[in-house]
Image (cartoon, rainbow, N blue to C red; front, side, top):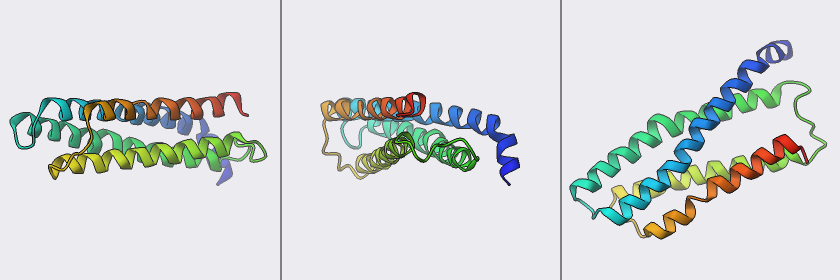
Length: 149
């Protein structure tokens, strides 16, 4: 099994990078859609319906599959012998960032459900502030992997 993982390493790494890029695109765009949804529509109007469709498609067609592929490919990379130095801090820091990013993804999914239920309580400004979360997590994750603290 370890020989297979080692031979697939460049492919898994490539797949992981592509999935993370797709996931991050969604994590950046969905809160921005929420900004416009909160500021430019009222529950039940035609714009509300359009925003709900866009948000659902982004989450289900792009973000969820990208997150799953990023996790699976990432776990394959972690299982490849000699790739991770478990004596260093960086793998644990990266894991904390990934778990936080996954939590943020789930939080966004919950916020989408609030719009569907016509129960959104956050403002466009609050969504703008939350739009910075994936950037901060990306910085932590990338620096952890590249600098290897």
